[in-house]
Length: 154
Image (cartoon, rainbow, N blue to C red; front, side, top):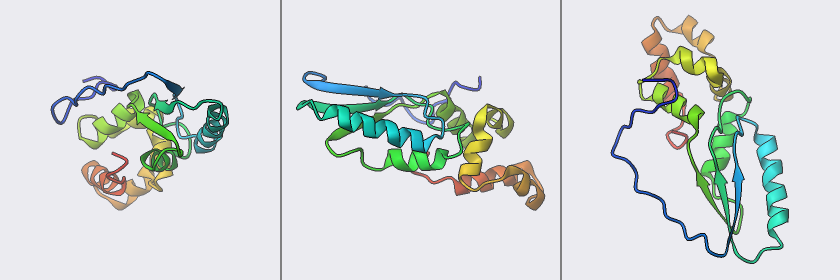
């Protein structure tokens, strides 16, 4: 398995069909743990959308985590209700796939950390070096990390 190819846990999800007639769609990608910038962009979208009476959709294109310092806060924001009057669709990017592969036990910690996962762990208050000094094995460290990351973020 490669770093960004997810081994499915369950059967494939049903295809999402959306009626796009009379809808205005905004797309956001590559947030990478930058919460402040995501909120600023959403404010611009809200202002722009005032001129439309149609349905409003924000499509999140993935890569919400890694590299930036507020990945956990970004995910908290995305699992909360979307801005009033909007529908939000969140797609998984390759960084989410890598994290899920690690959390599912299909990828070791090191490759994920090398692509920005370390900053993601820091955003949860997790310091792998500190865990290494507390626990005797890599399996115990991984188990503790998996316990800390909230289910709704997975």
